[in-house]
Image (cartoon, rainbow, N blue to C red; front, side, top):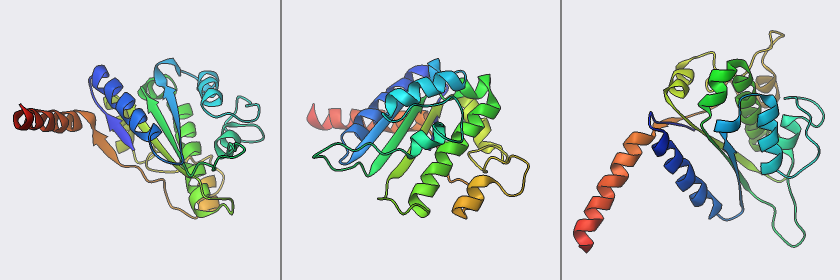
Length: 198
């Protein structure tokens, strides 16, 4: 999902509320990314390896010990059920989009591809991956771009896109919402509750 607002405070409140809600879900892992501090691959990997315990993470998108391999990694704890859902909540995702559009697309592609692979291809115990990208209007613009990775798989120029071949899915699936409209409806609900209970 892509959630946008022109107001930084509303984005922050939305990210915090969503993260708190998801943390309360049964059999779920929540991986928050603080996009204000993500401007390159190094800083993304720095946050990813702290959100997901696992093997050593090399600073590359694909290959051994890469971003994709850590996204596939499933943490198991003795005496506890394995997580069935993993949520990535990336606040201020537009910071990396503005800093390095190509890298942002590659990371979105990797996250979407691993989600599709896990759900439709892998024989392992099902782990549902979902990502929420929170940011300003530039995320809306990127969502509208048919060649962007919210709407199409990353294409390296050699044959069909990798994730299309692996998953047999034509394109990643994202929805979009405006945080301001959600905040407005929540505020209206609060006012109505206040009238009933006041």
